[in-house]
Image 1 (cartoon, rainbow, N blue to C red):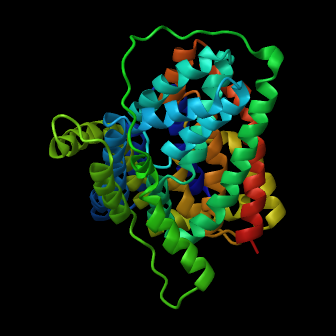
Image 2 (tube, rainbow, N blue to C red):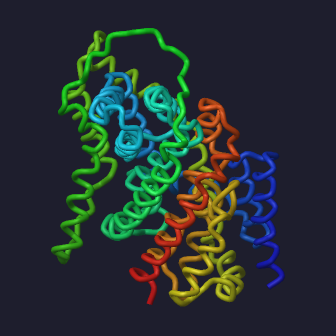
Length: 432
């Protein structure tokens, strides 16, 4: 038990250092992996394997993130994202709430594939001037963007690949939970819009004027580019759930991403420099944009490798068994109360220690990989929408002229309720 408390103490120390911005997650996670292995008295040969094998543990997730970034660059460079926003603005007219919800839906659609701060800046600089010119409060504009972004992220294939690799889940299992969770997040978003965009709250907040330029709209079929990778993945996932074949086939996410890139190159407007140059530039810029996420995955892989070592598991498992719930009610209550631990790079933050703890929690009696996926994906909505340490939250807050902590306070109640609903669904689906 003493050794178990020491190992958990390492998690706590690193969480505090990340919370205080004394140590970035990119550095903290590898240090944590090595420290845990040393304290658990892992042989030095295994320690070297934790570092080397851990660096490759999430190799499919690296590839997925890079290919998704290439699609994002193609969508940005060919005007597809801008066309989607402008066409939606025309459809919504001057009805503020309708237009806000329509554009939030477009944001969600885009972020099923897009990711990273670059993509956020690209989409936000198109969307924000439209919404601010309609008189929507700055805080509401920023929050709706984050809600739409997180809603789309539920179906983001890069995120799915991480859950598949770390917890060994199938596409069908993830889809079974992602669909109802998305419905809950959509309801939370609509509720936020209705409450925050009451007519008496609308004012005129004009964005900084932009130079007039002629926009050439992309053809309608090119607007499908962001969701093309989802089509084969969801099709086979739904087929497996309905038909339940003896040998279910999960369509490879990396292959789906390559199909999306090929479709985008053919369907999107041809740039002056040609399609080959478009692909080359998109690959170079995309890899640069996603480099911080890939670097973080290196540390996550090392941490997963460390905490799944038999010597670590045998010391920590008894303590986790005593702490973690084994009933449906306990599952909902415990993870709902612990949901704020997904904020500030806490232990339930999947881009921090979350995936490292996932394997240990999944081995606890009464839980399992699917229930842990549901828990992390549910509480992860708090991190995606409300966490002030997200670089995209900071950038959005600066753009709309509000304090980043105001975004946390404005969105937390809505997202926490959606997370509670997700945990209830997860308990029903995956807990016995």
